[in-house]
Image 1 (tube, rainbow, N blue to C red):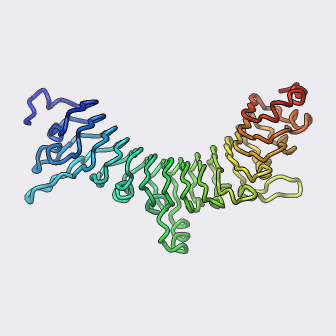
Image 2 (image 1 turned 90 degrees about the horizontal axis):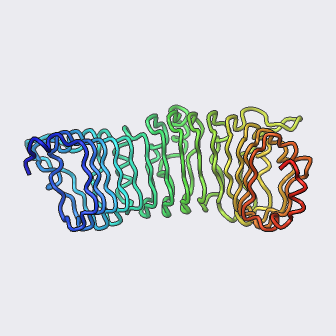
Image 3 (image 1 turned 90 degrees about the vertical axis):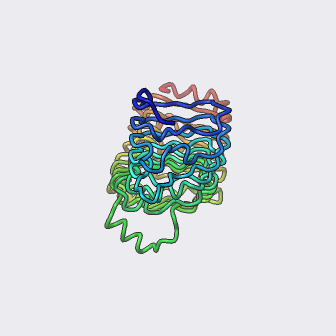
Length: 380
C-alpha cells in the first residue's frame, strides 16, 4: 500500500472488531500517525513485516500511543527487520504501550527508546520482564495485571531508579519479587548511595507467591503504598514508618501462619506517644487481617495524623480496643467482614473521636445484632 495524500495526514486510527481480518495493513508507512488502537481482531495470529510496510525507512515515525486489546489469537508480534544498508528502527517516539487480553502472545518487540507508560493486562506475561529490563532508562509508569507467567522483575527497577513514578503489579499469581540474585550487602550500599527519589506509587496486590519486597529506606517521594493479599509474606519491609510523604497505606492479607500483625514498631516515650517521625504524613490506612488475628496492631494508636481507617477480615477480633479513642483526627471509620466482632470501644472512648464524620459497619453480624449497644452511642 502506498498511502495517498489523504492518508498522509492521518493522526488517529482505530481498528475494532474486524473479526475476519487476518493481516494488518502497512500502517507503519503513515508519517503523521500518533495514536493507533487495535482491538478485537480475532483472526490475526501474527504481526510481521506487512505491519511496518518497509525495511528501508523508520516505521511509525510519529506514533506516540499504541494499544493492542482483545487479540485472542495473536501469538507473534515480530520486530521490524531492517535491511543490511539501513539503520532504520520502528516506534522511535512511542511513549505509551497498552497490551491487554492477548492471552496467546509470547513474542513481541521489547525495545522502545521513548517508552514511558507500559500497561500489560491479562496476557501471557513472558515478554514483560524483557520489556521492563530493556526500557529502564525511560519508563515512568508500569502497570502489570493478571499475567500468569510473570515471575521476576529486575531489581534495578526500584533500586537507584530516578525515572519511575508508579509501579502496579496486580493479581500476578506466580510473581515472586525482584531478582534475588544480587548481593544483599551491595544492594544496601546502593540504596544508601542512590535512594529512589521519584517513585510515588507502589502497589503489590494479590501476588500470593511474593517472597520479599525491597527495603524502602530512601523512597522519599512515596505517597501511596499498597501490599495486600501476598500470602507468603511474614514481615513488612523496614523503613516505611519513616517515609516523609507516605499518605496512603494499604497493607495485610499476609501469611496465615502469623499470630500477630507485623506492623512497624514505634519508639514510645514516657508520655505514651511515638518518638521521632512515625508515619508523619499518613492519613489513610486500609488494613486487612486473617483468621488467626485476635487483635489490631496496637501501633495504630500512634498514627496521630490518621483521618481514614478501614479494617477488613479480622475474623477472630471480638472487641475493638479502647485506644481507638486516641485517634483524634479520625473522620472515616469502616469495619468490614469482622464476623466475631461484638463490641465497639466504650462510650467514653468513642466520644473522644470528635472529628468522626462517617462510621460503617459491614458484615459484622454479631455486632449488628447488638442494636441496643450501638444505639446507646448517641453521638454516632
